Image (cartoon, rainbow over all chains, first blue to last red):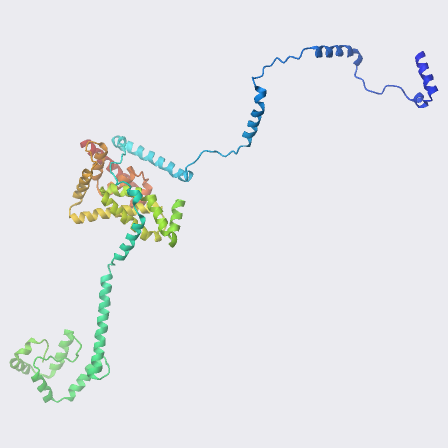
Length: 271
Length: 181
């Protein structure tokens, strides 16, 4: 108490009026029972720090010497590309479905054969035939192509002969026509007329001839057969013409003529 | 159709890539077609002639190939027909009966320089040559090429049921031949 009064008097003499008026209660937080446990806590700290620092765990030899390299290696592995370094044959995956299907088919065939003939299924499918060396590597497709072109050139159509024959026939007809036209033009000097028109013309001309002139001609040309149609080879027509010609001739006259001219019997349809 | 075959066909139809595409087609299918033909005609020189004719027909006909079937099926069909045509021509040239032709083919098997009558594989070949042509075809396509009946039906233009029956008979005949020889 006396001490407190002395301190207050000192403050008054020092002129610290603010301090004299201030509230000197402690406003800081203090855990409960802090001072009660303080001594024990201090002694515990003293004990712990007085212990010797000995690490009971073992560490591999040269662990710390190799640690940096180990850590760097781990870092470098994590940086490596995840690309798989193994090679896959070209086209492998494209051919894979076919290869699998082939295996399935082979299995089906084997099972089927086993069922039908166990003997045959037990035989190996060894190829007994030989092939000239390098046959498949030296087969030249270009030669096959050239042979194909030659084969194409040599191929003769089944209708080629007929086509040629047709061409010749057409050419022959055309030549005959030209000859006929030329003959008529140069030797007859008359325009080309139809068969009927020429027949009518001939008849007209003959009708203008006298009987004596006709008889004289026939006498000089016994083997000449006269037809009303010069171009007709039709036997039926010839017979018709002859009948027409002989319409006004009696049978006796015909018989007499044939007796006098035996050669005319040989001529088909002559007078 | 496989993508590769489609591309080959497209290239074949272009003038500047036609030969290259044709070469690729030959290289891709030559061995399969060769052995298919060889098993029918036996002799290598005959097989070579037939194979050349096959690819000549391919060259001439591929432009108009309608792609309504696999290229592989179409090629096999041509090879089959060419083989049968060749055998038919051989028959006419020698003026012998069908049975004698098959005996002739068996003789070609025996005439092979590697022929060994004691080996089962050669007996199998002899047995195969005893079969009628069509049955031989069915057997070869199924046994060696492991062709599904559905595909075989398109190659040979025969029903699947008939093909199965034909194969069954062929196997039984071959088994009997091997047992008796």
